[in-house]
Amino acid sequence: MHILWDFDGTLFDTYPAYTNILSQVLGDTENKQEIYEKLKISYSHAISYYNISNDQEEKIKNLKKKLPPHEIKPFNGVEAILKYANKNVIMTHKHRDGVEAILKYYGWDPYFVDIVTIDDGFPRKPDSLAYLYLHKKHKIDLVIGDRELDLLPAKELGIATCIFQSDSNVADYRLQDYSEFFNTTISLAT
Image (cartoon, rainbow, N blue to C red; front, side, top):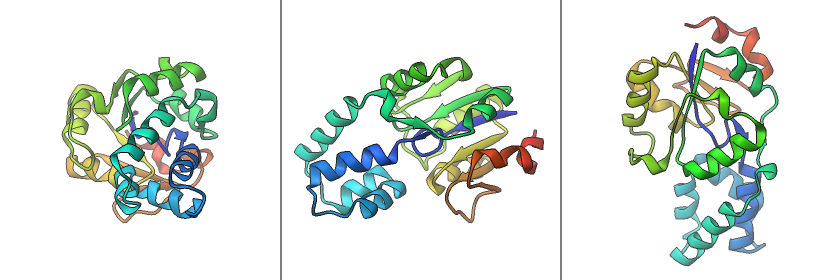
């Protein structure tokens, strides 16, 4: 099985750390649960919703760069799926250096044969160009993401999709916890 993974909220539980950063920049008057929910839609949605200025956005970016890898935790059970897959690739809007630092910290860099980041110049999701590139190169069987935005490019290309800890009408499979992966038909897909 060849799996394309989203990074934030799919491989790693980054949203709590990002919520704290936005809360710090916005001030304690904003509700952290609401910030979390806006970030889950998308980073750009949260920026727009809170009318974040260029200065504030620059501060957010600097704080994100300073996040130590140990504050970004992997989801329980995901490593077993990484080991199970024949190939794993990542498509993320994060910068490559941040992704690689986190993967290296957890010793997960050998699990991934390819990584496409915002630095590679592909349009942002839900545009399918990066997915098409990875699919042509690696023959992707399944895309796993935590937002519908992660799944739409795969659906456009006819690739099976799995939504993690969320709901989506376009998802072929749903997982609330990665321990469910081997008890579903997902692990049988090829």
